[in-house]
Image (tube, rainbow, N blue to C red; front, side, top):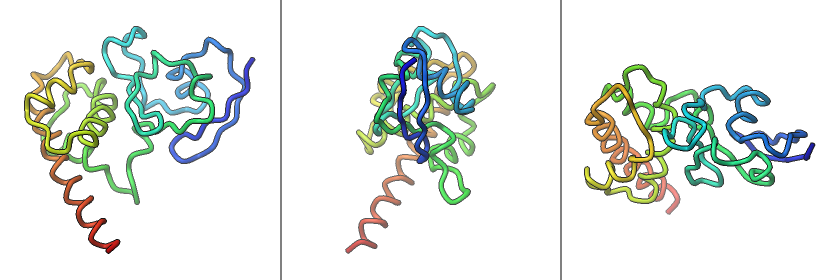
Length: 165
């Protein structure tokens, strides 16, 4: 067993884990963060995407011991003040999901994508999301949701920077 200390959704956890435990299994089985789903266990589908130190990572492709000393954000950790994150709200409003299985990973990847490229074109969004698979939709509403959320997130960033002046 190996002792790890990791901050998940703002809370510090210290646990003993088997060195071969995948981050996705640690999150789900040890911490109860079941919003992060296991899709393929091969890093092909992106359903397990979380943020590690602010960047999107497929948690089925990372060992829990690699998260030691780092900060992990799951789909459960992105809402603030009881309200949905703008990306969650946009996915809801744009009907960007059907069965919903891929949605947590899609949202986490989309947040990272918009953070890196707030003015992404439709083509750039499609390219940036290509590591996350959806078997139900044609992706059009997903792209629309990312575009809508990007605008909201840019507006929030602008208003928070003005408030700090």
